[in-house]
Length: 478
Ligand code: SF4
Image (cartoon, rainbow, N blue to C red; front, side, top):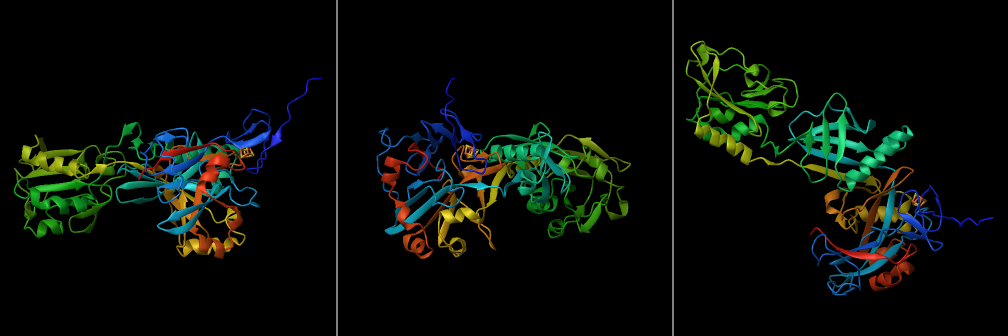
């Protein structure tokens, strides 16, 4: 009978794969090499002295000066480090560093985040979907639309309810979408009763197949304020069409202070304060994030008693300058389209010029306050307190994390600040993210750290760790 190769068990996550010689486990992050479980990706060392994206192997490449002082410029990241799971052992690497003459320790581990997600900011005025509408990836619910911000639509994706609280398919698709978003890949998202949007960290969003180029200069009211004095004398009335606040220069305070004459214009919509109107139309993909393609549809009858007259000129423009039109009132006080005067075109161009490039931003957010803290210290609450007191710095793949106030260690980080491919997953399903804690050696001793496991960087590079000795050095973003 042919002897079957013996499989060995990986215990780096709760899945506990049995892996045959030469094969990888379910997450492709660990493999059986010669009867030993190794981490497939090399341990990543960040070196600020080499250019972003440059990658070298330590000792094998003359470009690296071989310096192994792990000071401020050379940092052991947790990418490729391995995990502490099942959290009974110290973190895979606890590395000594000298920063400005003081002894520091960096504790690195790849953290398994069952409680995690991403917050997505999409720079667009266009209506992507109603607040709280479900967001889907490949048909499965993975999150929802949340409160819009100034010039941007916001999504909240992932979280434990989608990862583990729904069907298997929902969990898998959620994990897959999060992983790709965190690794800076493009992901198509569909919003119930709304749009399809392609999101990629740091890239322009694509809404219903159309690439978004500009983020609005401001709301309609702000745009009036910014440009009122430049329009004076060139046109009799200006309306800045905006789904949130449509502005009318003759009524707006910015017009009043420069003695802009009344025009008798009437806007259909909810008048908030003078020259500022809400709900002039439904939200959509048209002018200024409304559903309109004809801006005249938001105007009512002109009032002669308030200054309307034949020959009165009107500029209508959106908050990005993407849409604009020029009109003149005829004898019946009906606006008739006219060619845009060059002088006014310059002001429309100025609105467009003042817009910033539209981008998608992806922030990874997760709770690092669980059992993985025991990989850092025997008394985990001390780590939480040290983080909140600002004595322990938290980074993900070398990128500084924002730590939420309150309980736990809930972190948020811009994924574009991490090296490429920094995130992984396990099929539980959960995301795996690199996590580093850096603190003074004295603080590490005080909080009950695994001080006997502290190593120098040269020792790490030479001998590796529990999961092998492969390493690489990459340049950082800063
Ligand atoms: S999924 Fe990956 S980390 Fe988890 S046991 Fe399998 S190989 Fe190990």
